[in-house]
Image (cartoon, rainbow, N blue to C red; front, side, top):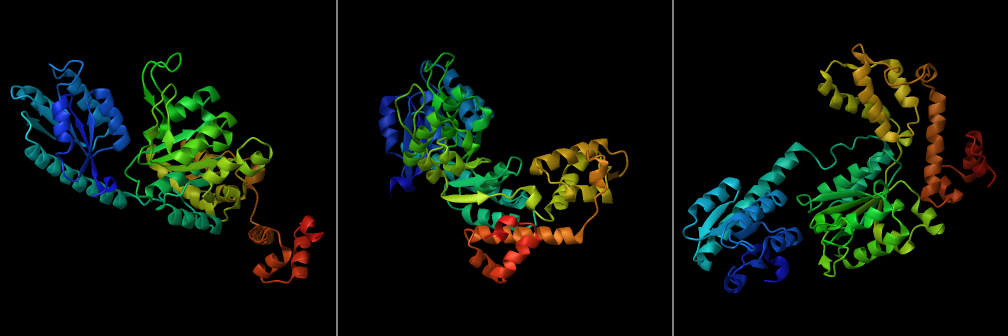
Length: 455
């Protein structure tokens, strides 16, 4: 059996003789040995074992169980589903019971019989797998991976279909969209559709962290690496071991860090600040930005080689103003979500409110709509939310539906979409629209698209 198929098992034991004995005692497991608490936590982060055997007598206080108890609590805090089997001395029954009360799965008293301990480990692993299966089934019943992503417009459905195709893969994915369109929601959907769904999803926003702190947040640091580094701290990338690392607003990443990020993407090895030991990290990378990366590349503000690394798959989220029919759909869903928290007094929207929502361009996208609906639920005095409750002026709420304007807007959007799909080739775009080239020119002129009309 190759190492890749072996199940990871963490053995925390400071006795060198027992370390050698246990290293090869467990058939079907890749055994990782730790002689102290810090090493154990480091290996736990790297390998995420389902089962841990833990000797309570660890240095620097091997004669007592204080260090082992602390290790137990930290292991269960970081990996609450892992099964910890504590190993104690013959006369240490009280500490064994205390460990069980703290959350240990079982205890085993020395002297160690590898065969007997192996049976306990196998039983613990079988229980872990059963519980894991139950958690997965429960998660599937509670929500679908695309929960929270609401939309019926063609552009939104196209984006969702792409998420469903890409999600199960490990492809590095770039999510593009204006601020407030829900890029992190799409990243979480990709994670939830993947085989990594039960592993961590760790997010970091490049634009929210000062440049001088971003490197240490990404890659972590060793104790003493710089002033204020009082303890060893894993980076966000390392914390996502086995799962998904979501790097939001990568367009704001400083050039000085882009080279280091590129090296990580190529080698999947990271190194903490002040450290020399390379750390292998198995994560899926999802990036997002509201900025035009190709334009940044032309300006020399973003590395082209990094762009190609992060854009194996590109998912573009349309802005809310281009999502025909989705505005009211989203507003209603938000009303249902937040209404219960405020007593469930609101029944719906007035006609003027619905018209205002549908005609407003929403520069802040879904985030702005959500904020306005939450505000309106609090401020509304009756059972229906009015345009005024949503913060709209009279002239906006007084707008009426204009069928001709709506038809022209759809025609304009279809022409632009056809041109985008066919790299601005007018003949091919016209064929895709089912009209002749002269007809397309005439329609463009009628719709006020002079640039196309002059071609």
